[in-house]
Amino acid sequence: MKTLKFKTNINCGGCVSKVTPFLDRQEGVNAWKVDTNNADKILTIESNGATEDEVKATLQKIGFKAESVNSN
Image (cartoon, rainbow, N blue to C red; front, side, top):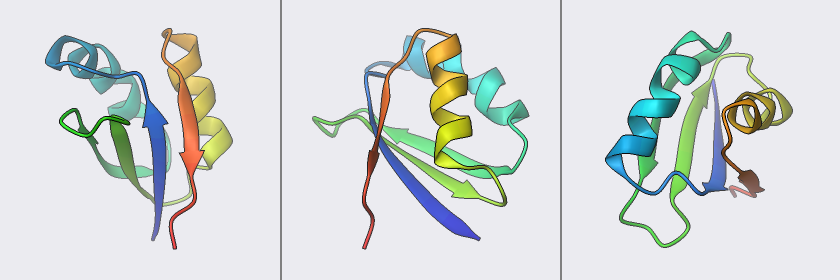
């Protein structure tokens, strides 16, 4: 299992509910959450095969930006 982190523009509960069905259906995503209290709106994904590019593409399709954050 790998953890992916992204800075996003998912900044409210309405935005979270908009991305929920897409991330829930995304192949290789085990679990995910968005910290809307963080200035960078960090999306954390527990990946079971999903790549950063796949997640970015999914979010872009529905109008959100995601920028990879290097997790150490």
